[in-house]
Length: 146
Image (cartoon, rainbow, N blue to C red; front, side):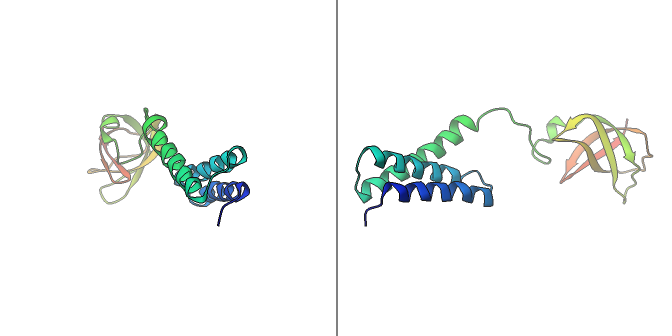
């Protein structure tokens, strides 16, 4: 069975829309590859094998291009991935904390994408005290008095 140009266009739009349901930002490249094959069939007639080969090659080329070129760069990391940048940051306690009760600390500038974090402590810290980050433990910051 030979695929018509509109089959590829429909497949391409279906895959691009499927990216909305599966937000991995990966399916979109296969959808764009299918759209490219559909547009190519409008210009040049191709057999089924050549169509599938063009779709695979275009999709993989876009994935490689995304991973090597566009995804490169300086990005803010999320909690637990880059504790070296957060250690030593000073904040203000907005909710008191004790060794077995979590508190909250607010920073003047966002740390790891947020300006307020839940924190754990080794000794009780009162509301309004200045604290500094000593480590990142999972999704919590460990802080101590300044």
